[in-house]
Amino acid sequence: MKKTSTIVVLFFFILSITVPGWAQDKIKLKYDFQVGTKLNYRMSVDGDVLIEIAGNQGAAMSKNAARMQGLFNYTHEVAARNDDEKTVTLNIAYGKSYMNTIVSNNVVPNPDVPQLEGKVAVVTVSENGDIKDYRLPQGLPPALQNADFKKMFTDFPARELRVGESWFSNVKTVDDNNADFTVTNSADTTYTVMGIEKKGAYECVKVEIAATTVSSTTSKKPELIINGAVEGRVEGVIFFELKHGFVVYSQLRTRISNKVVNGENIIDLRTGEKKQSPLITTTVDTDMNTVTELL
Image (cartoon, rainbow, N blue to C red; front, top):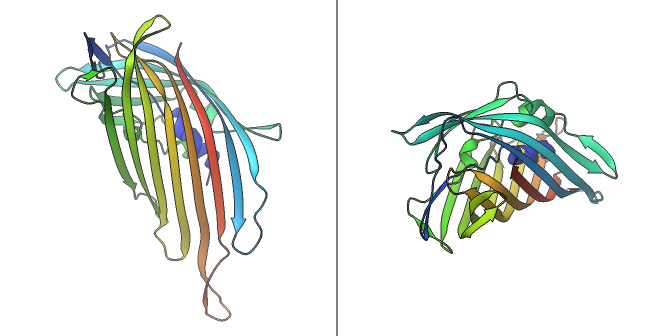
């Protein structure tokens, strides 16, 4: 299991696009891009990873600490707008990007991430944040083909909001496409409107985010032992431009604890007895800071 690539996928496809409209003391959040709008973004990722591997028939290996650093450049360009259906279609083009793991001062580049350069994803999103359609770039390495845009965009409430008011989102998905295991994910998120603030040259709505995520992995095959549990917490702020609707700046801290138990149920060919192979437990604790800026 490529833990580094999995973390990378979680970050570079987090494409924050949202639109607020404001009248007096009330705020209406919605996607409302205009055709031809082109926005250049830079997203930096920096954090610590602690990995521990232990077996049920021996002492645990020493914990391995690593640092992760990455930089992703991408552009949002509005290709089409459907006013009847209240949707916009975005071309998301990736520029130079990298993701490095640093262990004991040794830098290990992720070979997949630089291949993003020149790739274009296409996403159609409604004004309330529902993803109607998306197409990933052609030619992505296998480790980067698992992104699901339906999990990455904010659901906006139909009502207007006042400063200090919150709205909530609960998302639960079941991924049963893998032949070996099933993955269940759930996320509970609270969004709170903190006020109207200036961010650089832009008048913005400042929104505070607090989310908890839970994921479980279970084996489909009796001979395969896979038990995974992931718990996460995301906290931070996003600044949304008022008039035209786009992210100006966001800062998010993500803490994830990932525990996976692997093994096999095997048959001793000599005795015919069923037995369990030694179980390996891998625990990965991640503490990441992600900053996205409009250039």
